[in-house]
Amino acid sequence: MISQATSYFLPLHAQTAEIGDPVLARVFDEDLIIPLLAITCGTIIAVVAIVFSMMRTILVSRAKEQSRRELAAYVAEGSIDPDKAAALLEAGRPFWEKGPNKPG
Image (spheres, rainbow, N blue to C red):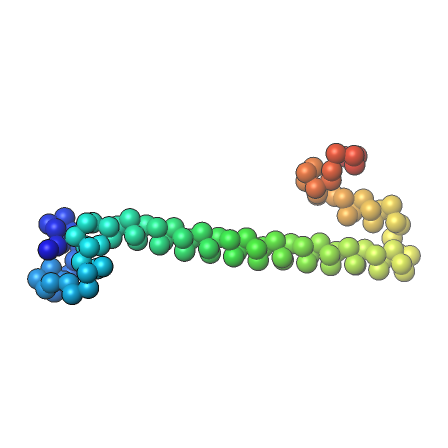
């Protein structure tokens, strides 16, 4: 039978009718629906966050590589000094990407 606390959240037809599936009946009887929904929603949010984080990482690495290629082309044609190109590549990099032996 459906408990009083759970029956408040169920539609009227679910409150009055017996649940034929024993698994669903157990979920509704033992008030497991809210923890089940919380775990499901948390898992969905985590998966979406991981996917968007991977997409961001891919886009950032592509942009860095594109910048490196453009600077290499400018150095090859002689319109920029190699020292300036190296300084431009190092500009804006966080200290954890530079490494312990690089000035900075």
